[in-house]
Each structure stands twice: as structure tokens, then as C-alpha cells.
Image (cartoon, rainbow, N blue to C red; front, side, top):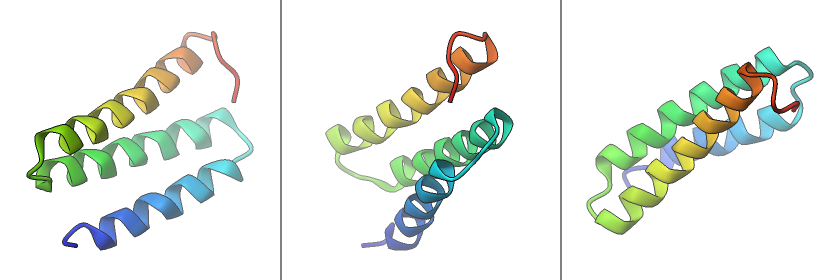
Amino acid sequence: EENKTVLAEFNSLLKEKSSCETTDEKMTINESLISKLDEIASKVKDDGLRRTYKLQAYGFLKENKKVAEGQLDF
């Protein structure tokens, strides 16, 4: 319940990511998504759920790394 606003912001960023045209824009959105997921994870009391959010953030981080290394195009 206390994460409703942050979750809404997260969903908005996901929608925004799908309409980005450049890799720089998508990488910036990924960084914002990671930040939101970290914020949510810091408030979650359930350890399993907290790890799920952290894993999701890691996925966005890994995606950015692959793009930066030229291994992945958005």
C-alpha cells in the first residue's frame, strides 16, 4: 500500500521506455527504473518479494551493460 505512488511511477517509466527511440533514452529510463525498484525494495518487509525487486533491477542494469558494450540493441 505504501508503495502505490512509486509503483505507479515505475509503470509510467515502463510505458515511456517502450516509446523511446534512442538507446541513450532507454538507458536513462532503465536507470530510473532501477532507482524506483531500489526504492520499493527498501520498503518491502517480505524478504522474497524484496529479492524479486532487486533481481528485476539487476535485469535492467545488465541490459544497460550489454547495450554499453555493444552486445544488445534496443
